Image (cartoon, rainbow, N blue to C red):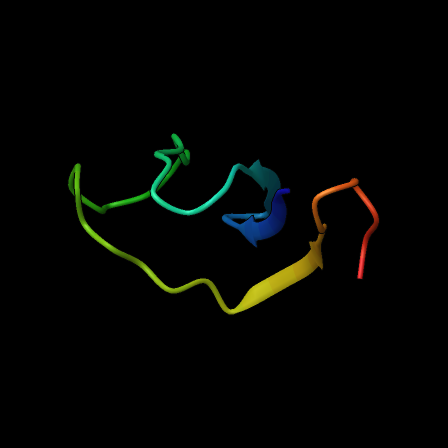
Length: 50
């Protein structure tokens, strides 16, 4: 299961919740929570996108 998010002109594949990702050009501090507005894809357990 994973999600694709778009931020800073790039797309990132994000693992399941509670995981940490490194996003370029971000002014967030480590441990800070953020809500992403652009979420082009979300997959379920078998990798099927919906």
